[in-house]
Image 1: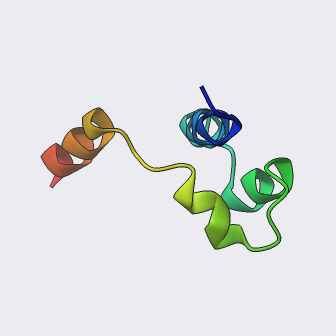
Image 2: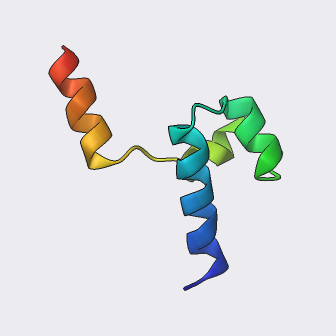
Length: 54
């Protein structure tokens, strides 16, 4: 396990909890909001759920 792996888990859990991207950036200590998005990628189940909405 690497610290970097934990950042991905933390970012994904924040996203799943509905935390806004601006707040995720602050919590993850990122200067740019889009950096936090790289750590909060959606899961396959979430992508399938969204695809089924269309």
